[in-house]
Image (cartoon, rainbow, N blue to C red; front, side, top):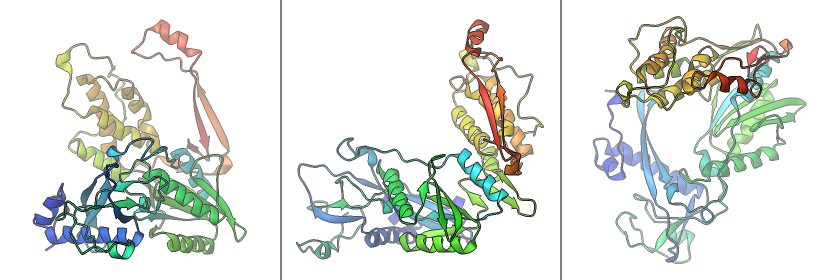
Length: 425
C-alpha cells in the first residue's frame, strides 16, 4: 500500500532517522548520499590539526512525492554547519549572481518571437561541483565509514565507524564545496561559468547569468538560476550538442521548458505567443494561510479600505505571519501577477504594523487569487511591439507622511514602467 507523503514523519537528527519507523529507507538514503560524496571526491581524510577547530555537519532529511511511480522518495543531504566558519579564514567572498526575472522575461519574449526551441535543465547536487580555494576541515560525518584512509593516505587505518570512534585522529579536508558552506553558491557559479567559457559562451553585458554563443551558425541563449538552467536556440541539433556536453561534466535532468524557477510556461507557437503563471504556487499560498474557504473577490484591493498605522495595541495581531504573507504575494506580483502589484505594494509600506484593518486589506489579494489562481498574466505578444515606457510623476502622497513632505518628494521621485514585446519588465 502506498504511503502518504504527508503522513511520513521527517526526522530531525541522524539518530531519529536510523531508529524510526522508516529506518531502512532513511539508511539507504544516507548511504546513497555518502556514496555520491565518495564518488565526487568531496573530501579526503587527513590527520586532525590540534590548532584548528573543524566545523561540524548536519543531516537534513526530506520526503519527496515521486510522480513517476506514485511512491514517496526519501532524500538525505549532508550539510556543513556554515555558521561555524570564520570570515577571512574559512571564506571571503560569498556573493553569487542569478538571472533576474526581467532578463528572463526578455529572453522568453525573444524565444516566442523567433520561435526558438527551448529546454530546461537541473544540475543535481550542483554545489558539490564547486572547487574550494580555502582549506576547510570538517568533522567526519556521523554514519560515515572511514574505510578509504588506506587508499587515500599514506598511513593505513582499520575500518571504523565515525559515530563509534569519537576519538578518531582524522578529519575531512574538503576538496569540493558542500551544501551549507557560505561560499558554496559562489564556488558553483564560478565552476559553471568556467565550463561555459570552454564551450564558447560569454556572459551578456545586459544581465547577469544570461550567456550567449554561436554554435553551427546558430545563436544560443542560456539562462542560469543557481542550479536551474534554460537553453533556447533555433536548432534542436545545437541544443542536443550542448546537453551532451553538460552531461559529460555534470549530472543533469532535462525538462521540456514548461516549468522554470517557479514559473509555469505555456506557448502557442502558431501565434508566437507565450504565457507565464504561478497557479500552483498561488494555490499553495491560499491553502497555507487558511483561505481556501474565503469568499473570492473580483478586484485585488478594496478601494474603501483606508490603510492607517495602528493606534491601539489591542488592535494588533501578533500571532499572524504578516511579513511572510506579504512576501508570498510580493513574489507572485514580481514574477507573474502584476494585477496584484498595487495592492501588495501598499501593504509593503507598513510591514511594521499588524493592525486588524491592515490584515483585512492584505487578505484581499489572496481572495482575488482564490478566484483567479491560474490567470496567465504575463503574455509575450511580439518583439515587433518594440520598447514602450510609461512614466508616473508620483503625485500621490504617502498616507504615512504629511502632505508637505509628500509635495517636497514629488520632484525627487519618478516611477516608470518599461514594456518590451508587450510584457512589463
